[in-house]
Length: 92
Image (cartoon, rainbow, N blue to C red; front, side, top):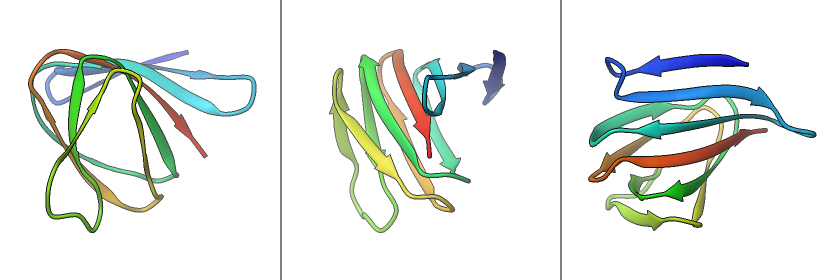
């Protein structure tokens, strides 16, 4: 397992290997973030809420606990976090 920190420690994750895919589980503090992907990512909100602007979209969409979204490889997406939020992300 590997511990990662981004945005001055406001986003923290632990990378691990599931039975089939690499993954991270983590927490995001309140803030606005920009991420780029190198692989296809499937993000599931575990607790809290993420407002997400996916590639090609002009508006943010809200994803609450239990919801998931997919970001293609080689893209950039934007997050608005209004409450500390936990997530699980798998990489394909």
